[in-house]
Image 1 (cartoon, rainbow, N blue to C red):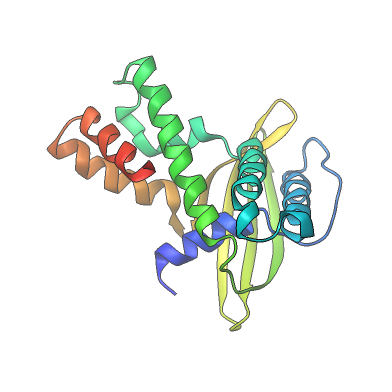
Image 2 (image 1 turned 90 degrees about the horizontal axis):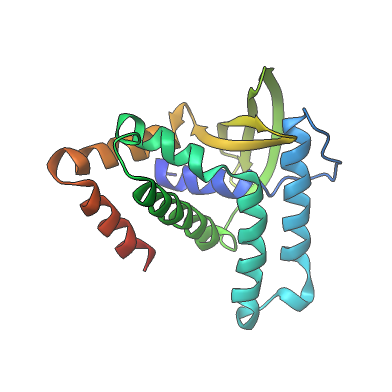
Length: 198
């Protein structure tokens, strides 16, 4: 399985986790599991299955994903030093486009997974930041270590990066966007993202 596919798995697995639990403030794993349980209900509901219900199902799942992902933090960390150089309007558009791109990547794979189980190894919290380390076991018995980076905002632990086998999703996009910005402008990057979102 390539790195790209592993990232797609990780985007899916952050929510499709198995048992039910209550989300307590200060417990990142519990909050991720609570979100996953709600998504699991949507995926298992007979009235939402089938091609004719794809739009409704995706819309409901998108809302739940957006509750747990911090798109602004993803964007800031992906653009790095280029973030502060942009206008408020351009930042807002980038957050919307980049978030939509990641959401669609997830939804493209949500019905085409071969996940066996997820093993939670540990949760490490340090003030308002934390790591959730898990192992993804596929039906083919392949194992992938995944680390979710989370940030506490209010009572919610929000995901701002995912690393698979030590490779960060934020860093991966940062390299791609940095190459674009080195050769052209931020407006060109936005134009490319608009095209991808289409």
